[in-house]
Image (cartoon, rainbow, N blue to C red; front, top):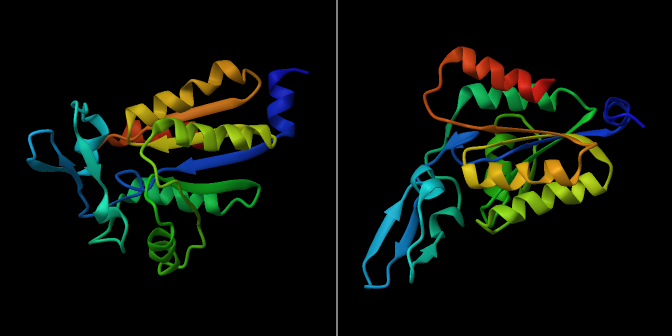
Length: 189
């Protein structure tokens, strides 16, 4: 069976990260260092942070209601487009431990969004969740996240599942509009 035919007959999955992909919030990751000092990182800083020996991470800000959420409109509009197509399973896959605050945030805007809270910042956990859905018959997968580590973990599935169309989009701040359109086309088609 050809790859194109497999994709046409399969199911479609669209996966979005939440923090710094669909919205920003005033939330920090606290890092207690080996010397006892504590520092804090916003999600963007955390995404590129290189842990040092003895670092202990505290995600307490992510275990409560959203603090001052602000939509990232271009990505939110893409989410809405995906939700308008009932043939696509659309999921927000977050490292947060609680799904309810995100679900409520979108519910208050009139959107019924499926949210999966992994309670883990390990990129492999997002990749494993997507792989589980590939094994359920999803053959067209798109994943949008602001973390290079998460994108790389999902990209590793491409060689393992050559008959599955896996598209990834690394979200970057302040990208130009024609690049946004390229990302939208990548997710849509």
